Image (cartoon, rainbow, N blue to C red):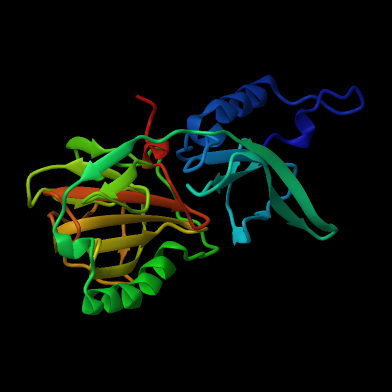
Length: 290
């Protein structure tokens, strides 16, 4: 941060030119100006709105969207909210709420329309027409999985300069596809599918701590990682877990499991989901632009 003595006021002594040069160099260092990775913005259902917050204090602002606390990040002395927009969000003018001592301040933005393609898949009938036993299992598992994905921990991880792709492979199903299984419409695809041979290592996209690790009916063997401030990632359909457990901390690029085809799956692949403030958002927005 620039010293007050650097202001060119005639009533104040001037800094040594060498000191001024050193300050300028420090301000131009990437670590001093750039925040860690920054997602790409796409104000559509399933996208991210990045909104500047008119707050200059050091403490993190409290912002909410759809009654959920929003991830905030500081860049170049300014605060921004990374608002996850649910796939179910209707297009139009909406507002996040910045909570201040004087009341809530609306931070309005427009959600644009987006058409997602339809995708038809054939899977085992038991994963579409559920038996009473399987339905009971899903009802038990859903709160656990949703609770892990929607967790909010105020602490923020020290994020790297970019997100690590969980594995290299063929992208088979992009985010947002309107899914039809065995001719029956189901929920939209809330992640990115990457195919690879069974046993291929899967790595964590970002640092964080494991908040769920279990074998679920639809998702198969799944790991959920909490990255702080309501940002989470989920990795599904694994063949096997790494030697880790709930509560363990992982680094970006650390192996967390192996590619598999457990759960409702048509072949060995990773289903990778990213979530902000309880909204599943396109993982591609966390990766560098192609």
